[in-house]
Length: 292
Length: 277
Image 1 (cartoon, rainbow over the protein chains, first blue to last red):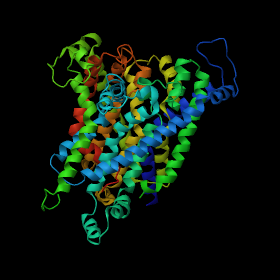
Image 2 (cartoon, one colour):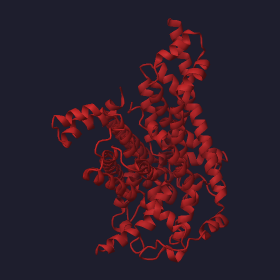
Image 3 (cartoon, rainbow over the protein chains, first blue to last red):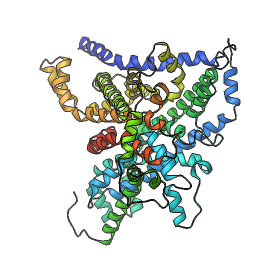
């Protein structure tokens, strides 16, 4: 038996090794190079400045006033999108849970934004929806007698949040709908008979049932939203100023616009630290729900 | 699903109407995009928006003529399909081993894999760019396929793992008792049982690769550029040519959106990561 167990273990290792080794390389090689670059002077515009930089790249990156803004914007973008998509997603899922005419079509309409690529999403909202003169939202605002909003100039981060939420709301919503389908109808009926109002039902029946899918949605969204890039790149380019610059975009600015590989690498290491802090929080918070 | 009791109550009608309203509001931007792509440039920026006009296909032909849509579309198809297949080939054995022969480190390995996905791609941009440059892989489909595969791998392993875990071990053990080898067990018992999981994982990977923008924007240009880069190239210089921008956008998203409509049930089922039994 024990030899069979050992045999199993060897097979397991063999089966896992392609995935584990490739991911290890995918992580360690860039990480090693990033650490190395972050410690030397490496500016593509200034090839004569070279040699050991010590921690000066780190100092430079932190002392950049954009640093604090970028951390804050990253967390704000992530947090608001998660709250909006989970909140609205739950509401819409409850609305659509029971059958009604055309439910299948409604489902298809709802999921559509999830399949739209970020560049199209961004351009569609930037021009056709949010343009302060020709955009559709401006027309709606004018129709109601309000002054049209110049979204990308006056509310840049909020605009990005809208675009990202539009993309991820369908995802959250459909996961919740699928989860609601497996709810125990009899239990719900019983609760209703006993006079539980909707809030009580929500708190004691729906939320516990949905806990695991809520965790899954949060987990996936954090994985994808921590480093939002395309939406910012194609719309606000991080501006005006640094108002919509997140961490990913700040590093991009350093590396490809300022050509300073050293400073960008230092920034990348901070981004990795930030990602790990968020990951630890996340696993603490919802890890329990993911197991079982 | 629920028994047919007196359905047409006011609450029922109100709820149905609001469900429809919500769906239309969420879908509206895409409808607007589609309609704009059939307008002339002047009609496209008319205020208030025109909804009745003679549709033209001019924008679509112009996009194809000017920037060779089919070239970029082909790149998107090749990179997303091949990275999906490669990803499934690497992720399936790993997920199998983790689900059926778990050790006390399995959870940690899984979490570690997911944590590599949380690191921002931009952190690896400079090293990967330099590696690609030095190996002559800049602007090639090959580098995109490898990168898409690697960046989707953690999610794929996780998805397949949660799927495999729900398959009763007894079935595999029975096959093993009957003297099946690992390969046989995999092909004749596990594969038929997990087609659904493989399909949803593959679908997700396909969608993610098709829509991937960060690496394609930064590593490719004319040669290996995907549809995401084609769309981005219409953004800055021609910001206000809405009709053409809409046409290129519609062309870029239509294949994957239509594909998504047909496969959404399967896809969403898999995305619940075993949260729904």
